[in-house]
Length: 372
Ligand SMILES: CC(C)(COP(=O)(O)OP(=O)(O)OC[C@H]1O[C@@H](n2cnc3c(N)ncnc32)[C@H](O)[C@@H]1OP(=O)(O)O)[C@@H](O)C(=O)NCCC(=O)NCCS
Image (cartoon, rainbow, N blue to C red; front, side, top):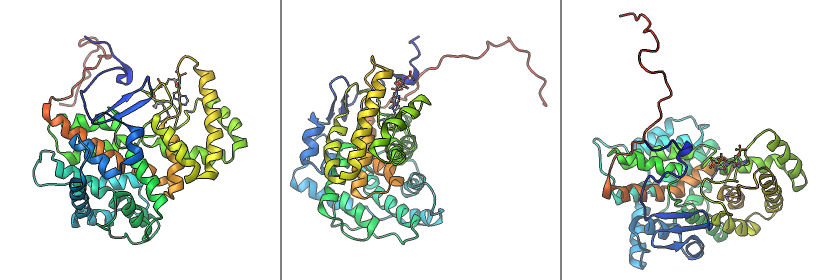
């Protein structure tokens, strides 16, 4: 019987060529062997998604075809629209996303995951996120456009105006950086659901549910909230030391796999200087103090900055309200979730780990008299 590993730490549960987190060396490698730094410097989200789904970067014609296919899949079906309209406008946008995408992907019978479905689900996420945002503000949703890129169309639908190119570029880079990350909790969830022979929408809905928590995708929102509470650089030391004394975890720090600075955080940190210069100053000092405290607490365990900390600053610079941060994460990671599900189709075996029985042995307690 293999030993119990809390949190499945160190357990190898899949083989994948979609992405690799090299935690010891602080490297993230996307499908095809591309380092995240190299890809983020040149690729758009659409090219990255194509790479994750197909195992190669698209040529011009292939990219054009993907753009057309995504552009045509941006509208909500009438049933999904009905579900959206019936929801309380104040609903947590992640709950809106989870519910409406479930309605969008609902079918009459069980379907096998396909690439076309992966493209359609990925294409429609921004429509739901932007609609949730506008409804919360009491505004009407804005129809998607098929002539804009994925990032530009999201900002268009949120604001009803075309965004400046630098904001689109920051958002697009964020989407490239977050698109996949090995066997993280939400991707694992998607693969577990896929392993039962379930459909792609169900895998996606489960992954969205796993992403929502503050230990995973919800950390970007939590990091921004922490920066709000700290307020200015001179408060950072006191605030963080008080929080640490109360055993609070600093959102945006620590990682199960990385024992170095997260390579995605490095790119976003640099971008934050121009995207959000004011917040950058507070964030940079907060980071310095947080790393010092984490080092003092655990000199043997490097708890470094992770992607969520600097993502919260860059998304602020893009103009995204923090309530939407986890949805933005999902907007990107759905490319990875669906790529993993499609990859796993080649060799499906139900994921069914074991547990250690902690209860009493049969016969050790008398059976209470039942009502039957
Ligand atoms: C990401 C995370 C869930 C990884 O968890 P994990 O691998 O199970 O890490 P562990 O719980 O084993 O942590 C080991 C030690 O480091 C400490 N630690 C880890 N991350 C910390 C953080 N962000 N703030 C404060 N202490 C932290 C833990 O408290 C623990 O110390 P303890 O044994 O004295 O309590 C964890 O680092 C965390 O909660 N980070 C904050 C949330 C976050 O940013 N999530 C996004 C990840 S991309």
